[in-house]
Image 1 (cartoon, rainbow, N blue to C red):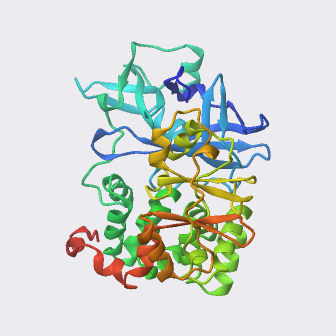
Image 2 (image 1 turned 180 degrees about the vertical axis):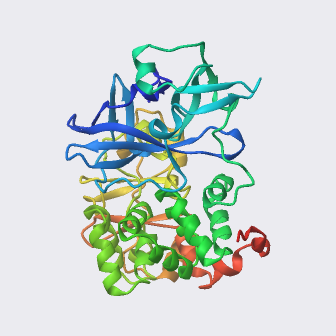
Length: 431
């Protein structure tokens, strides 16, 4: 959302065109998908239901929406064209929230919901439903009456917390309530909760999580739990979750599956994501190539410090990946053109924003070869006081980066995730 448009009422989004970054129309908005939360907190907006030109309805995550302005939606890139399927915890904003009868918290008066507004949270990519446009008294009014201006009774706009009748009950026992209750947990803590659930309950909660959240949680679970959960998902959704995982974690998980299942899921994944995972699976597990992520921050020599800091500020980056950027010749995606060196975060903070990264690059630090064994990687990180190191092939191309968290995963005992979960995890069991 642009700075000039702090919020948008959803009735203005119904039917607006959706464009890709090149300006080509890919479809139209048919609905919005949100998740209700306990305690009257504003719902989290997950994405849009977009009807593409083939009349198929697909899901567009808000993380792939770069702008909503002037009656149009702009996406960041390629859409997943699999048919949209609503999950148990999800609510369709136009289809299920509008025209509902709710009550004002202040005096208990029953009102009709005519519209709601969505807003992007400051400095984040998260979106929420923040305001509710309601009408006092009268009967239910369809959305078209609000659009055409034929409203009866007084209307007012209130905060989401000023009405009741939407939010989940905290004592509810469904997976929907459980997911909402644990929404603020870090992925590792939610993984702890899932680990101590019964298999049936674990599958229900996993099915209710959105793809990105489930991907983050799977990365923190023991291998047995990962395989069990993935095996209970529909194959197309399993492929979506694998796409949302870090490529190295997805490769580790797929390596635990039978060959036929592995190939079937790789075929269902987007070609680019599948190619990254296949490349990682070609290396030995305990080598730099097997441990690396293929998504480090890569910049061209003519990029500025300002551009580097903008990339470092991306919310989805782990602290280890955000600690440095790698300067390479085109192409910018791994495997890149010739690797020129590394620029560390602290150096970026010391130089003016207009400085070219090529002028401050550290080219003295030796990179890792893809066949570097785990003990040598550990020594390299310790010797140079690094939290991540570039992996470069014989031709000088950057293949990826090994981060300290991935090294620790392989240095600890195989069952460290299970033994490391808190002893009080049984208290989280929700039968």
